[in-house]
Length: 104
Image (cartoon, one colour):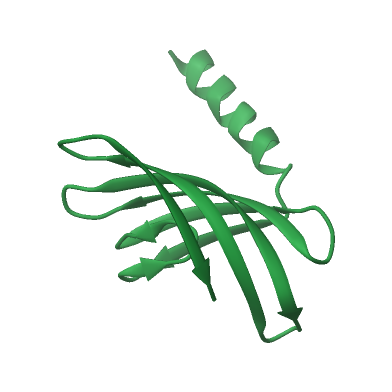
């Protein structure tokens, strides 16, 4: 059992090194996880303007898992504006797939 847990942790750490940004969010809304009280997200930048993100979150009776693309319009050290498109799989009483668009 310890071998499996060690292997799972090693694979998780190696997989996490592929991504440029890792984030934890607290609050009602997140551009990457949608509606969630607690969310985890990973982002991989392709170039200055485009990034891929993965996210998962928790909310009472709804748990979204999403994958999406960001297109940065303006990006500085302290601020950025971007539009995004994501596909979310909502784990709830009725499992749904929801496409989302947004501007942040």
